[in-house]
Length: 153
Image (cartoon, rainbow, N blue to C red; front, top):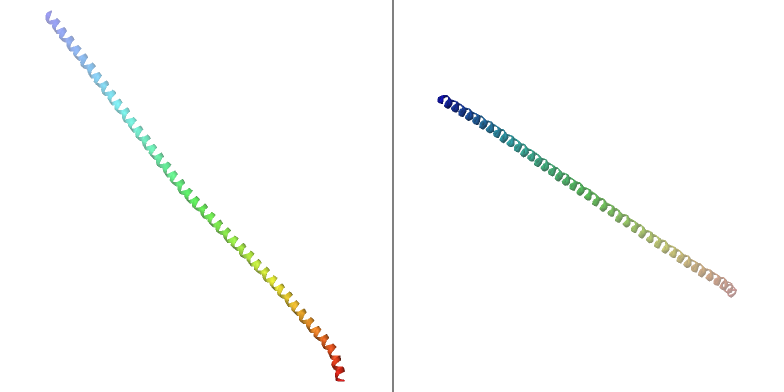
């Protein structure tokens, strides 16, 4: 009876030991599962963070390229506008110069016409004076001629 009791106690201890061992194994398996799950979640989070960092970097690079392209386009537009303004100013200066020359030539022609008129008038006056002088001389000769005729007679 004592032996049975000891065997029973020994059996119960073995059962308890097995129970503890099984529980310990279950705890270890659960712990390992938790650890693997945590590592997997951590890895996924890191991958997600890395993905977001890469996307952010790509977006920044796209933005920089966009700004750079806009700056180049603005520069080209500004240069074209400046060139157009310079061409316009040059055309304006050229047009003003042509107008000035035209006006100057007109003034010169008017002065030449005025001088030609004055010269013509002067010539007409001189011609009139000459004709008047010749007429007077002729009249004088006519008066003298009859006198000379009488003197001859």
